[in-house]
Length: 251
Image (cartoon, rainbow, N blue to C red; front, side, top):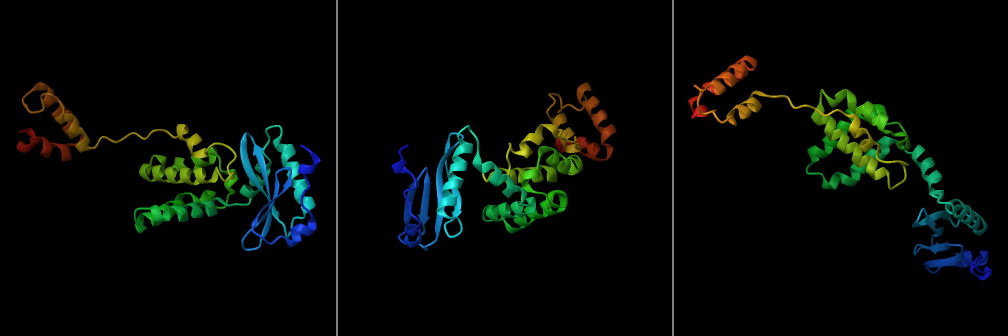
């Protein structure tokens, strides 16, 4: 790259620039003048194969020389497949609480939720089961082990609630990923294989459906039906016997 393509801007020009637009200095550095008159620095840079636009700060705070220095450092880090944004976002993630991110995500999804009651339950479930443990933790510190620790106590006793919370946690962490608060994969998805599958309890009505599907269910006198009748009655004598004795059910 020739010398004429870099360091094109002058300090005096930066002070006087008033027309909205994008003014290049070279090396991917631009002075952005907003319609409001605000001025900021931006760098166009390829990071890990993707073109990104990196903010270098307000022109009222960051001098032309400092903007060039920052741009040079970013380019040096990005050259060997590095990510100059990683450290920036890591620090940002360390300063951002999980609770703040969760409430921000809820505010974004609130208009799309089916009703106000559901919206309130969305937050209430987090306040009851998640915030006491994760609320004051940095969003960047949330790992699959932490997710498992939150869900395990209620995974068997309150399985439906736990599944809803897991879904909401996944939404929150998916939102955090493109903002680079979370450096790795979604920790909720990493935790899923560890959470045991909940077995459905066989209720009386569930057993009735099984009995109803047997080929001989219409013949109470058949050995197969009577055997199932006895076994079912032994397990659920209070609920099953009235149904199985019902002429309408056997008809």
